[in-house]
Length: 398
Image (cartoon, rainbow, N blue to C red; front, top):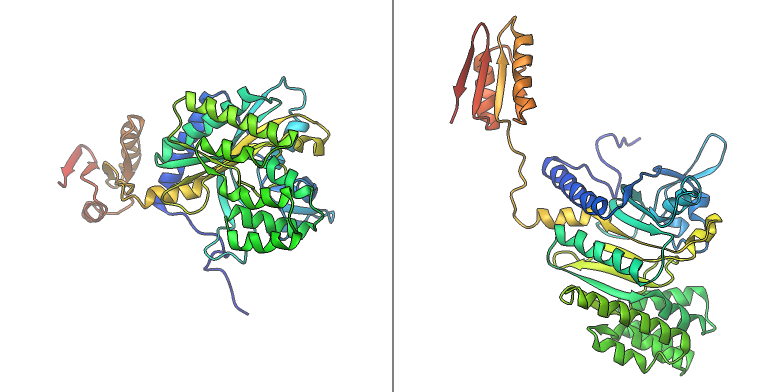
């Protein structure tokens, strides 16, 4: 029987020195942005009951969840999403807090994606959730926070802004199966015009079919709103378009025109989005590095209805971008190696503490002789050794 004790599971990887340094740098940078905007950190369990993600609006198929049972036979999953657990947390332990509630998190999610080449089944995400607030002020705050957060890490990016309601309204007016509706959604999301037309051509001519064919083409700057007005003529979609245009113009007033792209074909998989949706892309990465949107109905699943909006940033994707930019993220050697001669180990430990307390990177020698310590320091690039005995002697290796 084959043993798997020397490899990691598919879709996972070990993180080594430079990767860890960049991960911690990104997490610290983003946590600082969120904290300065008044968001407070929470951490939800890595294992949740399946029921947390089993609502109709989760948008997470059970096939991608890692499942297990506890010792009572109850079905559990490894956390595939952070928004749903935070909704559960808000509806229970945080239910009595004054609104709005500002939360942020940094934690992994787990999804089984066997059909995706080069996939990652374990992904570190960080993000915010603004719960109990609605309207343009809340939406602008979250969008501006998203742009500020990404700008701190990856300057060359674009944020695409859309609305979940357009696809939902048009598709629900068609008498089609859920599977066909999902196929149409995927074709719009990927801007696969050939597939989209072949799917919609079977449904005959109608204003809904025409609008759905047009959605992925409504992509660009402010001119998109005028183009869309010809197709969004009913009161519901017209109001959505008007609100999105108002939001866009507010972002322009903040000087963000070089960061924002309107994409009315932005139709994300998560079914809990009800209003605006947005995603961010960087030049060096094909997949979205940020996904977000408004989900005003999700908390109803936890018997605590309230409006909410948030986003999640793919930390792993940003780390990969930074590591590809030829910046120097190498692990720096210790500034000094302290070697204690026999009988002077405690004195050496106390001496090394002086450096550490001053913020100086210091290693303790574990070798028997000074010569071994010198050889080690040369290999590791340590420029100075302190030999602690009756006296303290420093040796410079530069």
